[in-house]
Image (cartoon, rainbow, N blue to C red; front, side, top):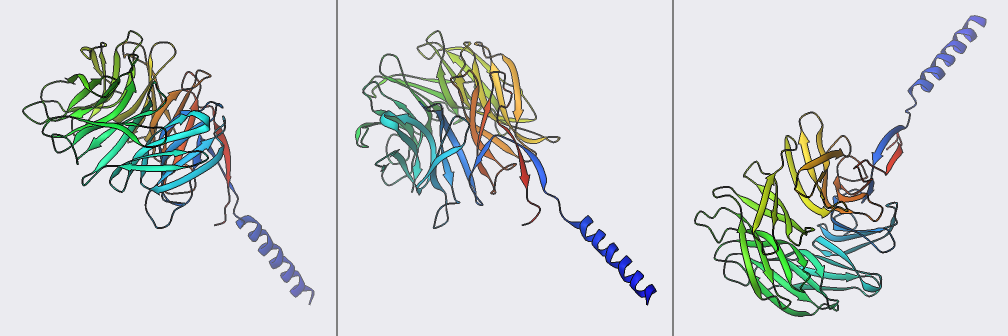
Length: 393
């Protein structure tokens, strides 16, 4: 009997020890940046620092919506990137956002095949602009009289298959006027700025003004009524090129960020004078496979750019690049996690650092999550967290 009891005690101790050894332990991972979303696909295409030193992001979500599909998605955060509120609007995608007076925010994108504009904060209004074809809005800026200028493309109006579409929109959503620009083929705007003379500068791409239909960078200047003052096509013959973004240079000219080459495009910087004449251009060789989508002036007279890069060794990362005033690269940083992460918009912040919005496969709760990264002035990440993941589903 004693032998049986001894065996039972030994077996119990062995089983208890085995069970203890097999208890799953939580995993601790290092997360760089803040994420927003749930189990579906979420992404941010635009960010702006707000008057309270927080941030407003715009993009899309398929997480918080029914029926399924992408819906316009906004996130307002505090200065540390913690979400204060989110807003899901109609089915579509937002590509641009900016702070409006009295704590409001203006969002631009597309919805149901039409160009889409919404104002969020207190009373919400949403408007679509277009006709029988397709319209899309990519960029917005404030006008000197307190309203908004919006740029994108239309296939319903104009001279060609697709034309640059420029709208001046009232703060209450009505249009003052609309304009189209382009030729007989495909033309579109990706960026718009209000200029010091009260007019507007538009940057995009065109296939209408060369014989071989290869895209060129397209730069357009209008007066305050949207009437054409001049337009320029910039680029190298027989090389495909286009613009993603444009910012003012310290000397009164412009710096355009775009792409050159197809199918293996590389980032392109073009500097023009105030009249749109090319001063210099640079292609940036920064990695195995690199795209840069956004440019912002830096306080030293140079520029900061954001996008993505991929190498076989490290996968996809957010790419942050700093150049001097002549477009020469001073430094670059790769940011993100172990999977695939993309930066879509960048802005210098009031403290001299940089804020980047995009999407991430590396962190968050869903297939992709909207992603916000904050760095110091040298591109080093400031928001780094240790997350504990439960071992249980």
